[in-house]
Length: 338
Figure 1 (cartoon, rainbow, N blue to C red):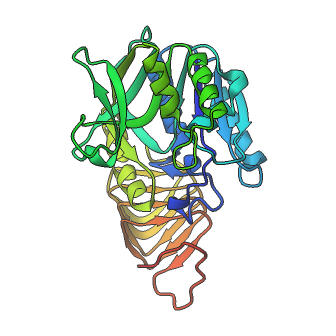
Figure 2 (figure 1 turned 45 degrees about the horizontal axis):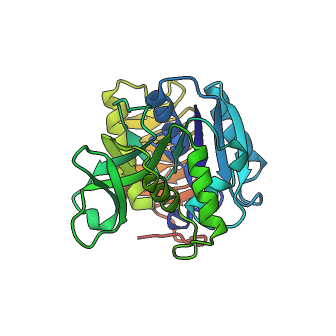
């Protein structure tokens, strides 16, 4: 089994946090989005992973350091890391076709924009499984249409009238992914584009017309990480889940002086907290320092210094300095001070 991860986008909605870090490598609840997504996918597959295929973008942004991080993720699961590049942002279908030499055999395709919680098995004898989540506002999403056998017979983008409440989350199983490759080759050769892009849905719909069996997979939780507000919401939910799972979230190698921690929180090693109250629902990255502050429901990344602050629903990046009593500021592009 292979895992294929198209991740060439620049994550513009999550700026400034994605100006130097690809969005899938932004940490939520103490771990990069991609790491958690791969972990949950491997658990779901429940069989050896032969390859993890990463489709990344411009080498000036997705540099050697990023490549090293991706290879380490694959090796953690004894899988061969394979890296392709999508240099032109021509859509989800085009991204998959950038990995054309690897498109054979069983595979799961995941778009790493979200975090999931899933504990149910799926039918590996089906030609395709599309994972979904029930939503209260299906008109805002792409949804699946089912027949009386609960098989998927259509994909509808942002339906104007009710089709179903099962929103597509960007995770797909293929018993033989070469079948998708063959259909996407036709889509691209015929220059069939939607909004200037080649979409995976056109390949999937062509497979349906050939009579392939499509089934629904349903996740327990689907946490969007598209922008800072959604990341903070996802961080809160994941910390709650991980705490319920009994996972150790706070390193033993931290320095606490007159500090109060209200769980659940994720605190990495070499963090110093002095005269402060942290939590609930706070993640603090390695090497950060917190002085005379109160922080709740927030994400603080690595090697950041915060003092004299009262922060709620906040997201602070790597290598930042914030003094709540300060009168001089140095804020870069796409930053917010509310």
